[in-house]
Image 1 (cartoon, rainbow, N blue to C red):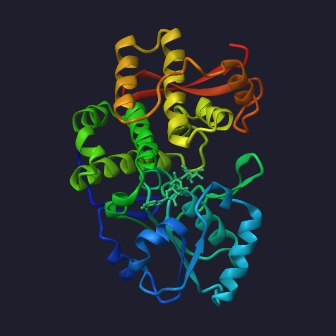
Image 2: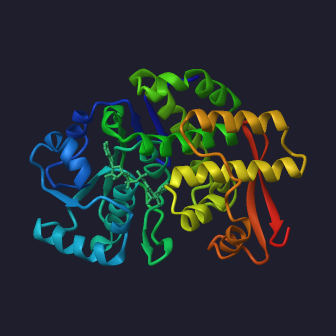
Length: 332
Ligand SMILES: NC(=O)c1ccc[n+]([C@@H]2O[C@H](COP(=O)([O-])OP(=O)(O)OC[C@H]3O[C@@H](n4cnc5c(N)ncnc54)[C@H](O)[C@@H]3O)[C@@H](O)[C@H]2O)c1
């Protein structure tokens, strides 16, 4: 695999494997850090007494009412148009920081130090941000790119196993849709990855970041190719809602369901389908779709905001490393 320490997309440099300390060379004294209570507890000692706005951890922080509260807290720090926001945390912090910076005084610059695997390979890349409105995920937000992303794998040493597996689901997704070689590499190195071997984590993150950056730089506003990143997410979002599973677990089951559909349509080879299931299993992700209520899931998929008329764009695999967008009629 091709190893590059910095990948640039849409003029945003993503520094992978750089030690967190280097961040002080990239920001100025007008910087305000945004983080959550868990990251603060584990890694607060790295934040060097900079003004830091700490929110409780959890998805329910991604709300408009919390955002208003954060605006007042920024003002109390003396924030103005010359301020810079640095989000240090998981995907929730990236989404909140990106959105807050995009609308605070009509927009101030921002950057991310992602601290979960999911945020390092996914949420920090691509410029999407936003908050939820009641049950509607990411209903209000913008496309806006950070000034930089600094990804230091040391943060993953304190990440709970289930959160780590959530991120791995996205890495496996990237391999499934874009790179058979990356899929082989994850299969071969999974044991070391699960032990959080730093050198392996750097390759894992780089390869996923490279794939996501390639796709979003060709299709920043999700008009076409970027939809491939939704592999496993069409059913995944519905499973997340209906079964109350964590995002990565739901995406794992969503990928298995998408592959079942591809198998039924004779697009995917049964041996490839089984290979994906084996890898997800070994990564500690759920793959048994037998207990899922398919009718209720389909009803939820029908209500998804990404639905276009009577068709749904499903991402299906032709083979490991090659995905296509298939428009499927709802009663299919
Ligand atoms: N903008 C995008 O393109 C995009 C893409 C994917 C996901 N997302 C969003 O990302 C969010 C999910 O991200 P997530 O899985 O990182 O969730 P998260 O931010 O809630 O982090 C998961 C948990 O890990 C804790 N944590 C973070 N870093 C830690 C560390 N180093 N050690 C120990 N604990 C740590 C957090 O406090 C939290 O409890 C969702 O809101 C989703 O919508 C956005």
